[in-house]
Length: 278
Ligand SMILES: C[S@@+](CC[C@H](N)C(=O)[O-])C[C@H]1O[C@@H](n2cnc3c(N)ncnc32)[C@H](O)[C@@H]1O
Figure 1 (cartoon, rainbow, N blue to C red):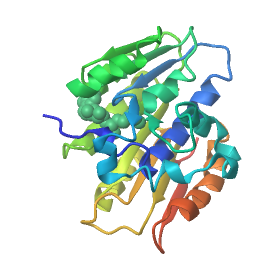
Figure 2: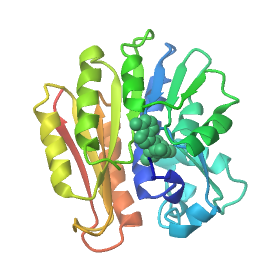
Figure 3: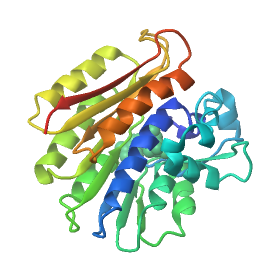
Figure 4: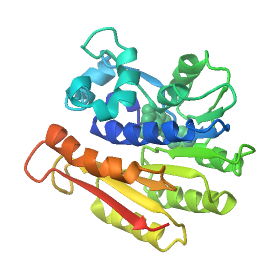
C-alpha cells in the first residue's frame, strides 16, 4: 500500500530542481514543429493546494517556491510564469505538479501518458487534466507503463521518472527500467529524480549509470545542508540522459544562485557534472 502523498511536499526545493529541468526539456522539444510523446511514470495529483492541511503541515513551499520572486529570476521566467498563472496574487496558493507543467507545453499533435498508482491522487490527476484532450491518465505501474510506449511512434520522447522511493529496491528498479528503456529507444530524453537520504545509495546509482553503456548522462544536485545520515532529505538530484542542448550551461549558472537563495546553512551545495560524455 502506498503511503507517500506529494501534497505534503509540493513546491519544496526538490520540486524546484526537478521542475526547472522539466521545463527546460519541454521547451527544447517544443522548439521543433515535430510531435513528441511525454511520459510521466509517477505523475502525482497534477496540482496542489498550498493552503491544504497537507501542505500546511510541513509548509515546505515556504522555504521553497515562495522564495523565488520573478523579478529576481528572469532566467526562470517560463517556470515561474506557469506557477504564477495559477495564482492571482503574490501569495502562492497553488503549485503545479509535473503533469500541469507538461500540459503547458503539450500541443494538439503531441501525446502525454500519465501514470499514478495512488487511488486518491489518480482521481485528482484525472480531474486536473480532464480539459486536455491529448492526455491519457492511467492508474497502473508507471515503470511498466513507460516501457510500453517505447519506442514511440513520434520518434521523440521525454520520460520523467519521479518515484517516491518508498520501496527499498526502487533505486535498483528505476535503473533497470531506464536501461531497458534506453535499449528500446536510445535517443529519448530521460529525467530521473532521486532523493539523497542515504548517500551510499546515490553513489551506487551513479556507478550503475556510469558503467551501463548509456551515453550522454548529466547529473544535477541541490543540497540545502551538508549530507548527514538520519536527518531526512536535505538534498536531491536529477539524472538526465540525452540532455537538451544548453542545459548544462544554464544549470551551472543557476545552481549556485539557488544554493544562495534556498540553502539553510553553511555547507549547502550543488553538483553539476557530466557523468558520461556524449
Ligand atoms: C514524487 S510523487 C510525483 C510528483 C510528480 N511527478 C510531480 O512532479 O508533481 C510520486 C508519485 O508516484 C506515485 N507512485 C508510486 N509508485 C508508483 C508506480 N509504481 N507507478 C505509478 N505511480 C506510482 C505515488 O503515489 C506518488 O503520487
